[in-house]
Length: 220
Image (cartoon, rainbow, N blue to C red; front, side, top):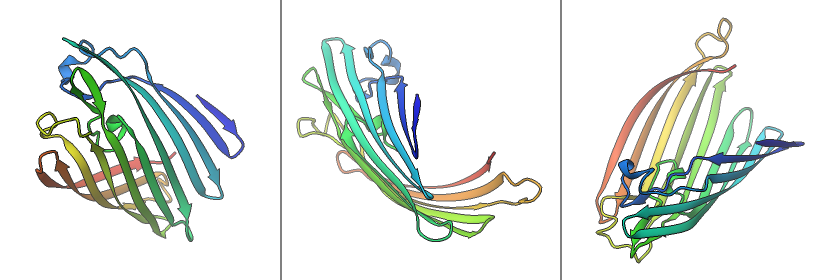
């Protein structure tokens, strides 16, 4: 639902819940979990002279009914994002988020919690990202960004329980977009992106990932 308030919009969404905690496999979802309440997100967007700000609040209820475990835990998160023009069409972008038990909503879909002593222990989650968009001309632009996502387990969760889970992931990316037919097909853009990431797992293991993506989009 969206409600317009001058230069701002208030948005409220109700989303399908999914209790994502260690000890529950994908095959268990729907039988082991008891997701009675939907995830609810309230977001306020504000636009002003090319700049945008948005703030969001996420509320979710992690619920697990499996064997002897009958556990429910409230989870929450907040985000603040901004895009600010600097000169011409160039912009700086900032994204930030913080909460507990919101790993599913992180960009890298980290863990939201663990089963400890027949209870759910939620993770402490945070993330941020900084980006810059530069226009060479009206048909050619680039972006560069970097940031980190983290889902840190509490001290009551042993390394054995969380073994192999990614608890921190940082990445950088750069992409180029070009409009090949600005007169004949002005909405058509083609692009390429290179991304590099480094993940750190519970127990000390870590590794890197490199990826090249090609994309085509059409703006209406």
